[in-house]
Length: 255
Length: 244
Image 1: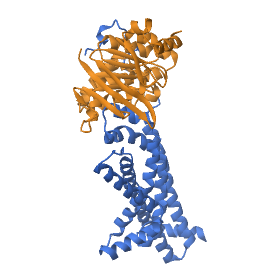
Image 2: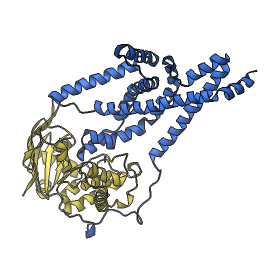
Image 3: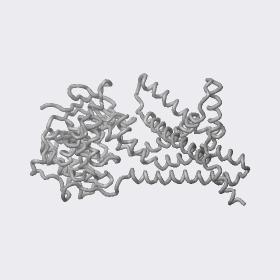
Image 4: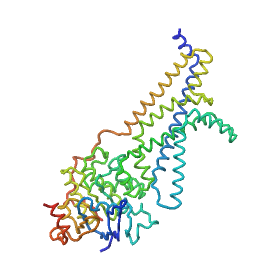
């Protein structure tokens, strides 16, 4: 009967499942964070105002072209194929034997980076033009405008989409088993290969995947609320004062 | 009188549409100048050209006897010397009231945080918003937002304040509180350049009124002259339409 099998599979193999789930989580957390950083960095570069002439314009055009090529290439090919090409290709072309874990993190990061840079682009477009203008008007350069004014708003706006990407990453790391990463799918295959109970073993994996993705979703919702700050504000001092009267000389500024 | 900003032969085109044509104009220290004219006359564009939010197509902007349209000129340093107040307020949505007034001081002017807060509080007090330091932009009314925006610009301690139709996006009952702040500032001797549709206000506060039409300065002079005894037919027509 299946029920007893569940118990015995879990009690015999729980360290393997947990290690697999841990590896899955580790790769997708690091991959999502690095990917988000790549996306934000590309967002900053892509929005640099184009200089009118000179070597700077030429350089910026080349950089933008390379970045666009990167985005289109990694969005346009399956991650499972990229994993094979990068892992075996690096060994063949450069004679580097990549550590499997590093290769996994690398593949997930650049993949996420490609998706995130499009998400960030959408986030930057959705920030009101007035925010850029008022930041420039107080003397901020492009980098300062992005770092202190625009990107904080972008990060808030793209948080739901980032959470989505995170969930996708948790699930998609399963394809990395093709290069031998010992994540949850790989471990479950090992377990089921020993006991030949495919349904029961993968059902356990299924539940573990769901616990991970659902927890991440809940945590991110909470973060969103937190970033929005409190609904109310407290006033300092007594009653709200109206505009200073011209007679109150102590309110006058001296220039 | 010492000139803070001098504009020579300034022109601006959007595509083939010429918005500003050969503008010569200057603002003196301590002076309050109001720019009036109908919509589309180029007033806002002139203001936006002065702090380079729009890139002028031709001409010169002289500040500290340097032409800031020169390629080598540091436009970011120049912009810190101009305080800009927008029609749409444009408070930073990710900062509360006090940080709106300190972020520029800390990041651009490199002031220490405590010093910046002291300066910010001083100007928030001037606009009567010092009790709202913890509020976010979205929690304030239009008039309150605009007063904070004025304090933010003042906190950079600029040489001249530019106001781009500061009351046009406000509900009528909030116009008064913003104009009152601006009147106080005008009396304090601040150099101000104001694009406005509030004729009564312009008459009351300005040392000089500039009337613009179709991208040129038609007439300028003291408010009594412009409002009571305009020299040009176009000025008379405009005033007849707006004053009624």
